[in-house]
Image (cartoon, rainbow, N blue to C red):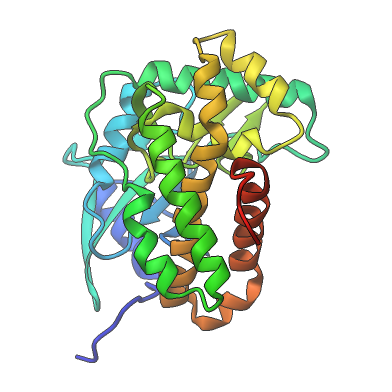
Amino acid sequence: MVPTLRSIVDPAWLASTVAREYGLEVSGCVLLRSLVNDVYRVDTPAGPRVLKLYRTGYSAAGREVALAAHVGSGVAQGVPLADGSPAGTIEAPEGARAFTLWEWVPGAKPAKPRTDELYHRFGIATAAFHEAASGFEAPSAVDPATLLDDVLASLPDPEDRRLTAALTAEAASRVAGAGLERGICHGDVTLDNVHADGDRLVFFDLDCAAENWLAADLSPVAATPQWPAFLAGYRTVRELPDTAVGALPWLDVLLRIGYLHFHLYAKPAMRGTESLTEGWVDQNLGQLRAAAGWLLPEWET
């Protein structure tokens, strides 16, 4: 067999697999998106479901379902297989790939323009997730600082390498010394991973969830104009010390190292080097250059 890095599975074959493994009547299956994981819509007489087919080597599919059940209200829930298992496996050309089935979250991604009132509810929902996820056991998230050498090796500009190395070292030191609370993070807190169903916000896609600094979940939102509304909403549910808010710019530096590693390595492996022209690398480098101007006032350009 020809070695394969990534395969796209026939939706009709997956439809029959879901029918067999979940004991459901399935009338259709269609691929919605393919990137880190492949996501399919599965149609049944009781309504649609979502099938997630994970990349080879991903071993935490069952844990994602277990975390959703632990959190309960406010996140999409997994559907157990007919034998009660949380996840199944298929043998793809590239190796074993886990799959899970999920309820179809009602509503849709919040429409633009996105208001302060929406972000206030978003902050409440994020804090509620952090509270509800407490006590769940999960491995620690990858430390972005451990990805630095790979990132530096792919940056052609010596000045970018020097700036990125200095910022990352300072960020790792500042975050480690900030006394931040740790817990279970969603891992990708953006409105792309939320459906609005009336006044209710429901999270989905927990495959990035891990034990980490809880404030790391807030870093992407902190860069938006609606951050004050989000923060006010978050603080109606749980405490967020000013020291944690002060650490957010440093957490953002580490977040961008993770983003750069993904766009320089993982994404080209999945989508080809053409993905390097989409602008994400330049955007994240631009953010790091801007951050150095005020986080490292002594920085010489």
